[in-house]
Image (cartoon, rainbow over all chains, first blue to last red; front, top):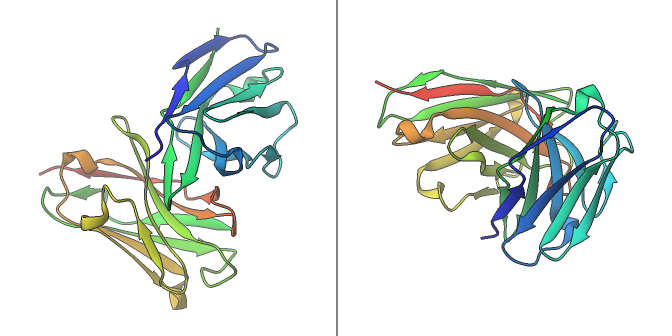
Length: 108
Length: 119
């Protein structure tokens, strides 16, 4: 089973700053089977980016991903007030879906 | 498409947790979508429980497989979750979700329902 680790646990930044969130897999995985979600308090997760770099419907281009092998990143180029939330990475492999523990992006 | 979970918010230890997800604006019988249950607890984060296809094909998380049954009722546009022999560790917000169809990522989620296991 692939285990996903996310860091940092919490990222404190100001609006307008750049955020870089890490997702590390316990084994080499394909970016084609990795996704990122955003979750705000009291809401369900929302799909942001999936596959190598496809944005879900309505997701602005300030969200981007990079990485390969075991190390992947989600970058928010300039934080908007609505971007302060928890972000999860998710992998699919061997008929199993797994999620990382999440990174909280909060306002500094 | 919109999904809505329903079911008891309180279940006693050792009993069976039963939830239903009703699909609006789409069909559980349509396309190649798989319909999942996912739960979220403070201790374990997001945990995929299992999925079903409208053909009845299922796949469960090995960690829960012995206690989980997911079924679909196409005439009601619903799918359901049963989790047996629950303990306090099963206390969580339970979500139903749909994958993208041909792509293993969840693009539609219900709002979630909190299920507490307590006597």
